Image (cartoon, rainbow, N blue to C red; front, side, top):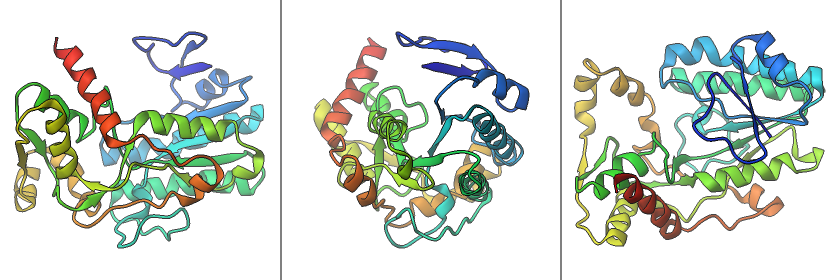
Length: 286
């Protein structure tokens, strides 16, 4: 396994090697990815629409070009943003309705890998996850705003409406799904796959269960949606989140039946995932 990023990670798994590269640069991508059988794109960028618009298309083109040159498969670790506001469970064949700058970028880069596959340049696929949670998931509303704060004796905080049914993906399940596609036959490529999740719950119910597992009161503060436009005048982070409220102002669920029929369906139960997340933050705070 080869880890490619700008700076060396804090820890490198046994059997892995690290290569420093900036995949925004075509030459770096081509050099770093030469000689591999499969490329998993798990690039993370700051949560900033302007950066996404400028950078994501270049990264996708560079990675696809490197795969085309070396004959590597391409697996995109994706999210569900491209679908935009929907009222039904999200399926792989749901018609995208990208509403907002970040959803439009995700739709654009999806078209790039789909076209590369259709043109027989790269065997490409995407594995799509819902909102993440789990140990050491720094951008997770469950992990960082919820469990970590409860462990520290603080109120859990929800910047979103917390009472609609909402699917969440346990990060180790996402890793397992990516491995499934790495090892899959070629007929699994040229299409996207949605990761199975634990049975759907609301954010409030999940955070309440986390508190129960810890034996602490389920204290949760919620940012009123009406305050978002005002706070957004002062906070760029809030401005970036506002366009994604369609994920929270209605039920937001994922249909992973296609993946389940082909690969596996035993997503990690919430109690198991929450216990692992609680243990991580307790150890971190010790």
